[in-house]
Amino acid sequence: MSNGATPETSSKAVRIPTTFNGSGISLAAIVNYPAGFDASRSSHYSAVVVSHPSGGVKEQTSGLYARKLAETGLLTVAFDASYQGESSGEPRQLDNPHIRTEDVSSVIDYLAALPYVNAARIGSMGVCAGGGFAAAATIRDRRIAALATVNAVNAGTLARNGMDGKGPDAGALQALAYASSVRTADAASDKPAQTTIIPSDKEEATKGGLLEGWEYYHDRCRNANAPVTFTTRSLMQTATFDAFQYAESMLTQPLLVVVGSEAFSKFMGEELHAKAVSKDKRLHVVKNASHMEVYDDANYVKEITKEVAGFFQSKLIA
Image (cartoon, rainbow, N blue to C red):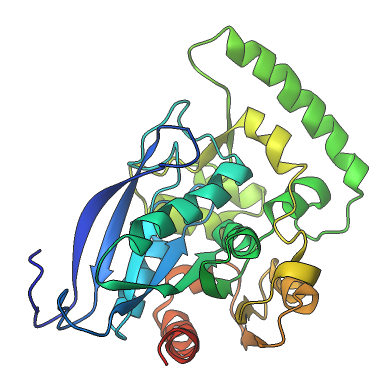
């Protein structure tokens, strides 16, 4: 697109180098510009970085929310995590939570250098595990001025304690031992082992209680770049990760936590809200919504977009 004003929202595909983390990865991203975008205007644009769930890509729920937020006047970026989607990096589908967190900061590096973005008014948003990584990034990266999460999942809690969060931490030792042995095997192979998040077989997914995930990832929002897997060895990092670590002392930025009333992840969002030291925080409950219904259900997306847009408009545009 041109730098001149445009009559409606528009978008552009870009490659974002991970300049400071030494990985040499380039992130594939979509920048969404608000209606009437004008790079030369004196008041620079506020921006929001949107992170996708584990197993997802920018063309799915994160991209949907990024586009919806751009319609409210924000400049937004949806991106593929390192090693995933259209981003570079081998092995494919590596899902290291520390790298996922660093990816958010890499996108902020890109935004902060744009002459038409106000570097002091950049927000972070994430869905599912992307919400957890967005929270971890916000705790560490003080350039993030505000945080919004939608059905946030703390990937470490999920790996250690299960979907209900009630399992003992030590229960992850078996998974760690398995992932460690897999890493040894990977070192002698050119095809690293993969763990499936949502089975592609509908019957198998149904038996495993994952029909909702199958309907989203393998039916209505299927994408060739989203196999919905991760490298098994990633469990070594994930099971020892805590997306909300230090939130009680360092998550000082304004915070909006959105949870579905019927979502398995609701307790994690509530934990983030309760734990954050921020004195400007709010919990919004989407009635009757399950975990994945908020990904693309038109009514839920409309409700959440209104809440999140209002939040960022009030915190990033003064």
